[in-house]
Amino acid sequence: MPPNRARRFLFQVRNRRGLGHMMRGLNIARELRALDPAAEILFYLRTPPSAGFWNTDFRYVVERDPDGLASWPEVLQQFGPDVVVYDTMLPKDASAEPLAESARYVYIMRKCLEEKQRQVFANPFLDRMAAILVPHVPEQFGYALPERIRDRTAYVGPIVRLPEAQTQSALRAKYGIGDGDFVLTSTVGGGGFEAQADVFFDTVFEVHRRIAGRLPHLRHLVIQGPNYAKTLAPLPGMTVIAFEPEMVNLLAASDLVIAEGGYNTVNEIRVTRTPAIFLPSVRGNDDQEERVRALAQRGLGFVFAPGAAAAIAEQVLDLAATPATLAAIRRRYGEDRAVLGNRAAAQRILDLVP
Image 1 (cartoon, rainbow, N blue to C red):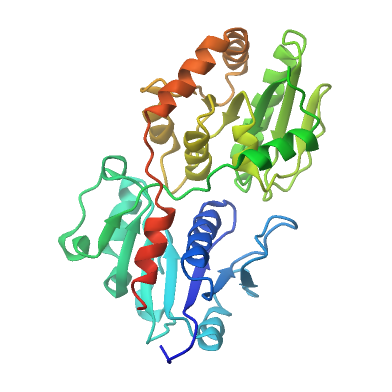
Image 2: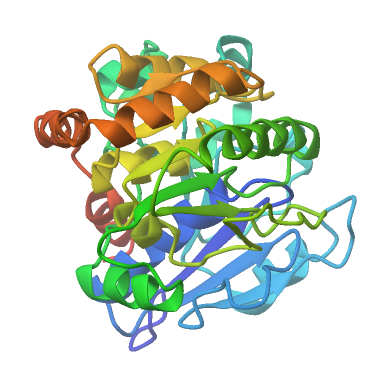
């Protein structure tokens, strides 16, 4: 790095349908900026973020080719990064991947399904990584590391944004939530997996029909997600929201959540200690069912199959009628001791460029 020049960090984010890659990158970038206010940070995105979603503290460029990485070589050349960060997705052909030869490379290795994880471990692009950061604790990751990457790998813990009390108060005012309201928030995450999202929303709407007349002071907020292409018409007593950029704070302000089982949502529920009903769906890269069953086994949530609206509705009504049960779940979350990896990940990235 030339003397007297700010350190430059480039995040490659393949954000087509989900938000996981983008949110982890933003959470690390916030910590990088806190540790090094002069740092130059740039995000390379496959698709533009929804209006109002992006953190304006960080610049981004959007790939012009919807099916390729045509802009990536130009971004590398023009920005001249000191560190390049990949998240989850590695190049299929490592030998053809454009490189910034002088940069150090970092890989955020989120846990994948077993076959996908084997492919990650076998990918020769891992040999270029100066650091491999696992956004889990070892027992959650569950795989033995290949010997060739062990000394470069660190388990930093979940990378997730923390809630803020002031923002929660603002959200309660924004949505007109009163002190006596029972706030049920239903979220499908990013919403980009349309088939799964459709099933989720069909279930949530049927749940609402079954509970609306039986649960006084219900405020049901249904979040479509920024990548959901359809528009939902709310039922009486329901508020449909296209997306909420302060999602972690909305979860914290909720009495109960209905969610799928994505990495971001589950970890945001953990840090907010919000009781949740999970409807995990099938994904190509990770195991939502495994993720949420691990919480349910510790009394930290409930798991149902998507479509089980009658049983879910009864569970919602039972929880709403027994505040002591909700309070007990929050107390058990107090013993969860989730060690967040935001700062640790940022520090390890900074250490690559003294």
